[in-house]
Amino acid sequence: MKILLLSRYGRMGASSRLRSYQYLPALRECGFKIDVAPLLEDSYLKDLYAGRKKRKINIANRYFHRLFKVINCRKYDLLWIEKELFPWLPSWFEEFLAAIGVKYIVDYDDAVFHRYDMLENNLLEKTLGQKIDRIMRGASLVIAGNGYLANRAVMAGAKKIERLPTVIDLERYPIDHLLQNEIFTIGWIGSPVTAQYLYNVKPVLTKLCENIKTCLVTIGAGPFPMEGLPVKNHPWSEETEAESIRNFDVGIMPLPDEPWTLGKCGYKLIQYMACGKPVVASAVGANIEIIDHEKNGFLVESEKEWEQAITMLYKDKELRKKMGKCGRKKVETDYCLQVTSLKLITLIKECL
Image: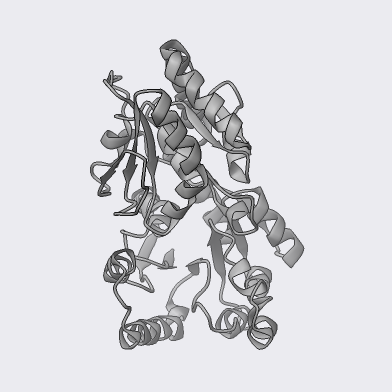
């Protein structure tokens, strides 16, 4: 059984790495032959995160490379598409594949449909507004990272929809020790693109730093101005991310309550919990599904609730340990590769 994986990014892209690449060893062990063809290479993300201008000729070359792959896709039993084949182009290609009987599954871990259906340009919105819905309707299977994304697939009229959260590999997140930091460490992991959400809690963190001995540690955010707040910025790498998170005392995930953020799958929360850390997060989207309030962390809405939750964890070391153990147990039960691999393998076999 041959599958063509048409991912969005190379391994540096979190969505591609977590939604597909980390499953490849298990799938190949089951006898699947999988060719991988990312649309954009790691160099694209390196330029994006560094703020360098993206060369249009390079992107055009990648689109032509993908077009060649799609034209020659009949030798595969199934196409596995991350989000869409060609961003910012209509869904002609996916609709054509469905019309000629080419089976494809499509995976979503972001509300990418809002990139098109909320456009202010009326002509573009008319052309692309229903693009993702059409792709979902033509798919043999839609895999959704959370309930909000799954509901959109239902409204789009998708034939079959399954929820599969974004998960960690337990082997990469061993629980071996709990560090005792001299300074209470509030941690966050992400990318320069999502680091903007930290500004939502900057007033709270600044106030906390005035009253208690604490600091904010970020992984992958890159340099960004947070005047008046002690911040230690660390670069991200796949090899060191788990060890870095183990140095946190608490992990945070602030999010505004907006259509786009409702599609977020809360992966950083799962990483924190896998490392045995309590979490504090905005009561938005998948965060509500992942956090059991006051058991493995806190769901908060107001600045006052943010301050109260972090202060409580600062003062009570035993509470941090208790919540951390509870969070780790939930990851082992629901949010790890060791659990979801079998489900994905079953889903793909059903499609074939």
